[in-house]
Amino acid sequence: MFDCIVKGGTLADGLGNKPETGDVAIKDGRIAEVGGRINGLAKRVIDADGALVTPGWIDLHTHYDGQVSWDSEMAPSSHNGVTTVVMGNCGVGFAPVLEGQEKELIELMEGVEDIPGSALHEGMEWGKWETFPEYLDYLETREFSLDVGAQIAHGSLRYYAMGERGRLNQDATEDDLSLMGKLVTEALDAGAVGFSTSRIIGHRSLWGEPVPGTFAPHQEVLAIAEAMKKSSKGVFQMIPAGTVGKLESLGGEKATQQEEHDLMVQVSMQSGRPVTFTLVQSPDYDPETWREILELTEIANDKGAKIYPQVSSR
Image (cartoon, rainbow, N blue to C red; front, top):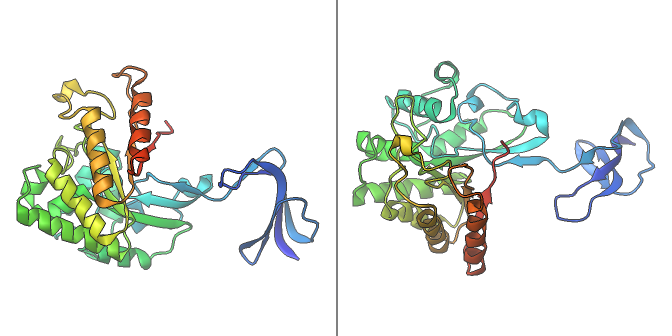
């Protein structure tokens, strides 16, 4: 006897096959049978007629970095069919961190993602980690209703490695680059699913300071790429300058979409790792700009790059 049979739904397997009507049987917490009509007995039968039945969704772009400290349910993602979330996007996160840096990282997250600083101050268990591997060890002590993947963020990395110089977007020295590369490799080897950076001037802390790494020269970005090559692990996640418009009221972006795309191609080719980026989503641009970026991406991938755009659901 099965524990549950989901009957008559439209099965979409996530592999690109044509959806078809069928059943899914579950036993002992695992899928036991898929497809066609399943005639066995079950303790529970769910009528899925008219509904899609799919594998669990992967939410690639979340900011649960603080919420993982106090919430096991990971709502609202877990309420919407999501079974895996990836956090640490947009160059903001909470590891690595030195004692005394917590306030600035909270203000950065609050400014960029509008997550209330009061909740982060009250809910986070500061002191249980410093390095990124220690942060992952901390997450292992928690229980969640879904799987959680964490990226090491450029903002916290730069602040940890360079102190105030890093937080205020001053140029990195060779020693700084060496240390950041070492920390990225350590994070990936410990289980980080990638590295993230934001290069749009609209991403700012609560007090108006751009995310650390916003103006990082190509030398710094490619040093991270080299660290990822050394580890042979992880995805490079980037918010390119210009993604949400020209932002002329803030002084204007410092790089064009073409320049940013060229940088992503170089990162992917040098590191051998996939690069994912947020596709342009602003009315400031010609309505065909997004199509041009996709065409450039296709050309780059045909030449050996691995670049994948993300599209906002909003």
